[in-house]
Length: 305
Image (cartoon, rainbow, N blue to C red; front, side):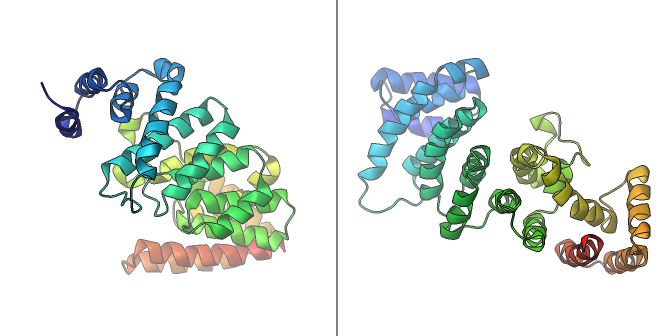
């Protein structure tokens, strides 16, 4: 009969839900309170059972929290199995609570999660700032960003939304939105429905997985008011036009008519020509986006005044 350490090694190599669940149950037969066994069994349940068994995660989290607290030095998340399990438990419990609209409880987990995950190996900031947005904790968002050792896409989108809701200067809001967009320019195209979200997880390429996840958690906050949408739409659509991310002919026609009416179409066309030339010269895509975002910020500022 295998001991728990041997079963954990076997769990690391398991590939199918059936294997993972079986090993998890074998671990729990030896130690009914084992957090690894509880996590393995929980992760292989269907959605409804997962929701009904959140106490299993809470119990496992309490157990692993003790293990982490007893370590003499802070564990390295990349190398420490206990630390990885601690993060995975907080991630699963926090996001499950958010999905069930138990946002205050999710926030409690998110704070602990982000504090431990200080190098951002897990989506702790996405959970944290989405919870704070849902709870309209706008001033607290500023304070948290100030003390956060990590910069994050969702955190910077939260900052922009918080500035809108606290009636900051329009120029400050636009700068914050432009900066949030600069961290992952594709996010806002999913947010505004210019691009469709993949219908299934299998359709998500690894190189866009983070982008889709960020967009999924900031889309609802951005789309919850016309005021927020107005702020993010102008730079997104112009950036899309300048970088050929915008392909709908009607949308392009409306955009060009708007800038023509504002007397800025010449500047838009000149900016697009510069961006096109950079593409022809095989410039780095990130460099092209940076220039396009700078052009976007300048032109939108003139448009809005």
